[in-house]
Length: 140
Image (cartoon, rainbow, N blue to C red; front, side, top):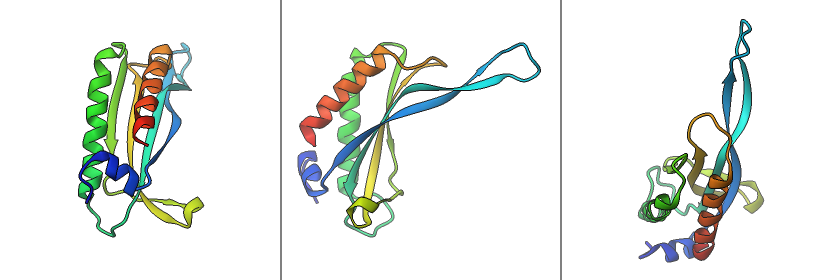
């Protein structure tokens, strides 16, 4: 078991990927049926690390990484626009199989940056993404 998050990153070969986060927005068109459109409301930053045990529940390394991500988000939130949300989403019982790495099982955590309400992502969400990528780059 790793003693700190830097050891977890190194031992688990951690890396992250950024994907757009979309929501459906209903628009009142005064017709019989409201129309829906897909809007990019923010970003999902997925952090992956090699899973070394066959255990179903998350191990200590996973919990340590989760706590470190939550702490990182807590330090960023005071600088966020009031229309932004940032949350760390654990997937403790989920295993991702990486087909590019010989079907290596990986654990994952997600940091979701989103615009509150039905609006699209804007400069505030971009700034938060930039800051999260900077801080993750210091770890990974």
